[in-house]
Length: 390
Image (cartoon, rainbow, N blue to C red; front, side, top):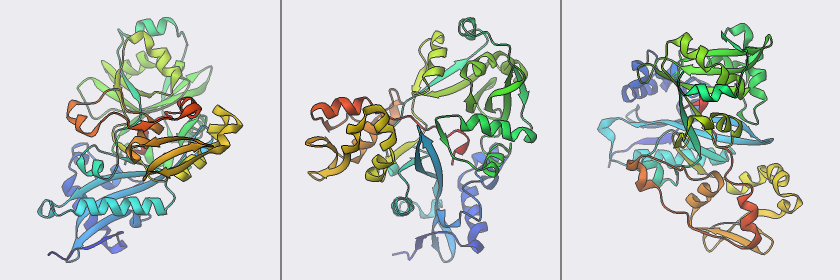
């Protein structure tokens, strides 16, 4: 039996070797004109070594999973999200269970670090076996000059776009901080993520109205279909963002500008309703609630706002060996923790046929008035990766 060392974090002197492994596995970064270190700066840096989890053989890294922890806000509730990415094993060492053992180690570490739920940048059997599911609800729109005409009939704003300059970072941050669902970032993290060397390679525009910035968009301009680009992150006035689309298309020489709106962004989803039925999607990966008891506790302000004082009695419990949520004598039982994650964040309405093997109907035993109460709160907002993609 091969005597692998690990799983454990990366030591400072091993950073270069780990990056060699990662660069050899993930070649798309170089195809985008960057590298993994510049492309994912929140993950690959010497301040995050303990979260660069590895297996080694004879001192050489042969398997890696990267973690980063993002503080976030959800309707006034402060949460911790664990981002899992850059999952890979040297081809010579695959098929030996290293990925599964590393992922189990990562989940244990994230739980110990106080993380509430995990977002994994991928959909495959490795993550399914670890209890991660495709969850969340979002809608993707292809905006063109033609199909935006009906939308713009209802939105007539004399806005203008300005390419972002670092001197305006304060305005951009102020716009982002007004979002009710967002990641918590330091000024330095913002500046890092707006760097055009990152994986998204964002080109950022501020949208001005009445002489001041009221919104911004970060557009991935160096990847994708010819003549089509994605808005990787947006914040601020939804009407201003929509009104700016024709200018953005012209400025970048595009035919299509794509945007994904999470289901809770009712302002944007409503404004784009004239475009017809959008493409349903999730957030692009898989998810797992690893600390349901703590998670429900942190959500208590949101539950109280939606349900009133009775929400103080809502607790997480285990019944019959499976997860459950109780309120007094009423209990909602879940088949397993996958069902719990799906109830909390919702199942995607549409997904690729090849991923159907990872989906199934919910297994939930509902009880009394608690069923109605939970339906008034869940599914929760869907966090998209935005610029925090790991």
